[in-house]
Length: 627
Image (cartoon, rainbow, N blue to C red; front, side, top):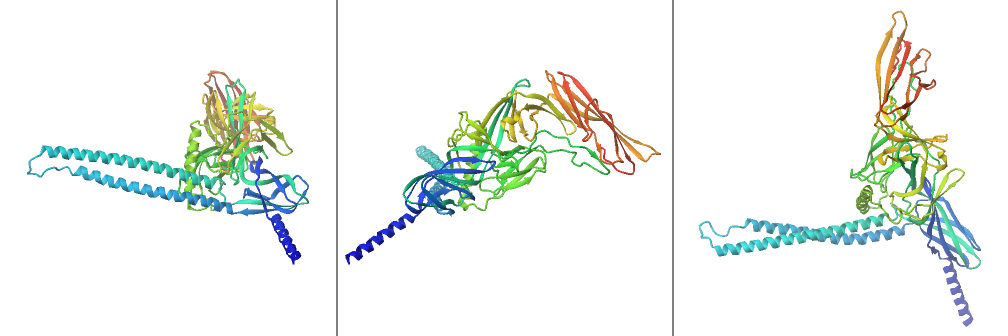
């Protein structure tokens, strides 16, 4: 009997040991490294895990819910075998977050009730004041005036009115204090709701392992996440046309992956650079019967506008605005306004903002207005209130930035020079940032310095008067490929003055990069039609039209200017249309496109004139729009 009891006890203890070994082991891991692409990021987590003998399951918690499951990679060092890797969503964390919000809401209700009582006290106090002011009759109409009673009444009324005003001031102070506490609670609720981004859950990675003996192992988890991106911006500074150009290369980083990246090693990957441009470009001017250029070949090189929310029509600050398929982007200011330089072609703008659906709009006008719809993934009405409070907080931070205050956040920005090592891979360039960075999952923009470049440049002014008489200062950089620039918007500073924004165009395959440094109003260019002639011949079946354009260049500067002027003559695409070039003032002519190029050296206060004259002959029974 005793032997049987011992056997049963051993079986029970053995079964308990097995159950304990099979229980999932929760593992705390830290984000160690992030490789951030133009869209998306690769996250690497590390952890030291004690693995028991036998089969066991390791649960890596608090992982982003927005991961690409197929991208999960798990590595571990030690004498054990990884049997399986599984991904599961975890909605329990959201319940904890909701409990915290509900506890804060209870405190908010107490404060709102107190505020209601204070407001009621103000109303009662005001009624007492009105009664004291109106009740000023001391005696009847026929009664004699008692000076003593009058003095007593006046003293009483003065004392009561003074006490009334003191009480009103006290209540107002209490109202202000309660309002301040309410705003603090609203911000706390907003912080809890955004602490993991606009997500309803976290996720777990379950790793099943088998070990013959207990072992201590260093694990590494790698996976891809969405809702993370970066785009470049530049500060271009030129002292004068005889000095080198200084270029500050910066990355604007944002992420809403659902997990905070704290003190991580950050690597920026360029991916594939995109095409963009800053100044207007001439297109071939082809002629054919009944052709009409309705748009006058006007290209949109800059777009501005405003972004609002569809639910309340209020401006949205901090919205990310990007040219789809490129690295060009910006963010809206405190009033929801934005301005962005555009590349050539038919660009599409992409608007994204925390708590709202992403929207894409083609650029059809220099002025655009976007209205974003609230995301269906918002938690509840509390989330809407929280985002409203968060919008106020973000607006204040943006105002601080405009005022010149450096927003340090959580040690994400630093005035210490950033050490960056560039690595050229087969298909992209990587910038390895030596200093650790913290990028919260809040959808805000964080600036990361990449490089500081000082290089010699060749300066030249440019104008295409048919499109615009504005004269652009341009700079040509040679051997620019070694800097690994991407297409992006640039802030321009010339002669220590901010002169506007432009675009760095990295699409060129040559060794020279053209930078547009903005408009110089001290060089004036005009283009006027001298004479519009239509010659008809009675015995001829043809009609002749002549265009005679005069381009005048005036240099108002105190220094000489090298100016490139580009114009064009029409090009015939029909054998029945004949274009005769009569005068081009020595321009270089591209016969395929009709482009005319003038390289001028204009002395201070000098004026030069260029003449473009051509004749178009076509059958008189056909219609040709010459210009």
